Length: 364
Ligand code: F6R
Image (cartoon, rainbow, N blue to C red; front, side):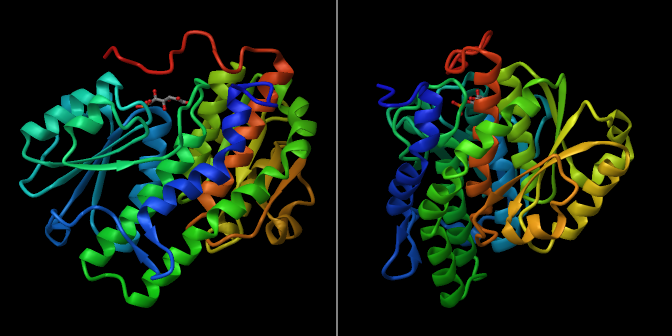
C-alpha cells in the first residue's frame, strides 16, 4: 500500500534510506571494513574488460558505474543501451565480464543482450531487483538489489540500490586487481555506510523542492547539466521529468553546452545544474555562468559550500548534505527524483501510471 503517501513513487523515494541500507548490508562487512560480494568462484583478477548493458534508468546507473570501475579498478568499461548492443557487433574477448542491470530482470532488450553475451563467451553478472526473474536465473553471478517491490512506473529506489551494489562491486574488482589497499577498502566501506543517513538528510529538502516545483512546471523545455558522475544523474533527472510530467527535458555534460545546445538558452528554459562541491565544481560553475550570461535561469543543486560559492544569481538552489564524492550520486538522485515528482503533481499528471509506459518492457 502507499501508506501515508499520495503516490507509490513518493513512498518509494522515501524508502531509499532503508532499502539502500538493506542492500549494503548484503555486500559490506562493516565491522571488518571489507566489501563482500559472492565472487569466490570467479577469477576477477583476470578480467580485462567489463561490458555493461541496460536500458533507461538502469543504464544510467551503469554509466555511473563506468566511472567507478575505471577509476578504482582501472578496468576499461564498454557500455551500451541493450537495444543497441547486439546490432553493433560488439567485440567480446574471451575472459570478459558482461554486466546487466535491470530492476525487473525481464526487460526484453536486456535479456536478449545477455544471451548474446553468453554466446560470446562472457561471464554474466546481473544486478536485478526481482530475485525470481529470468535474468536472475540466467546469471553466473547474481547481485540482487534489496529495494523490495517497485510499483511506481518511474524507477527511484531501484536506481539508488543499483548504485550501492555497483559501488561495492567496483571496490571488489579493484581489490581483486590489486588496486586497493586495506585502508582504501576500509574507507570505501565507511563512506558507503554513510549513504543511508545522507539519503535521509537529502529527503529533508522535500518541502523546499515542492515549493519551487511551479517554477519548472510552467516550462516547455528544461535542461539538466552535470560533469563526471553528475552527468548520468543529469540524464536521469531529464528522464524522470519527461516520463512523469511530459515536459521536454534534455541532459548535457556541462562542458558540451558551448558546442551547440547553449543556443537554446533563454529565460523560459530552466537549467538544472547538479554540482556537488569537489574537483569538478569550478568547471561546472563556469559552464553555469555561461548559461546565466545568456539570460538562462538556473536551479543549482549543490551542498552548502557550493551554494555559498555560486548560488547568488540562481533562480533557486537546493542544498544537499556535504557527502563524500563516492556516495554523491546516490544522494543527489533524491532531489532529482523529488523535483520531477512535484512538477508532475503540480501538472496533475498520473504520476504512478504515466501515459504510454509500462513498468516492465517485455517487447524488443
Ligand atoms: C525509468 C524507467 C525505465 C526503466 C527501463 C529498464 O524511470 O523506469 O527507463 O529503467 O525500462 O527497466 P529494467 O530496469 O526493469 O530493466
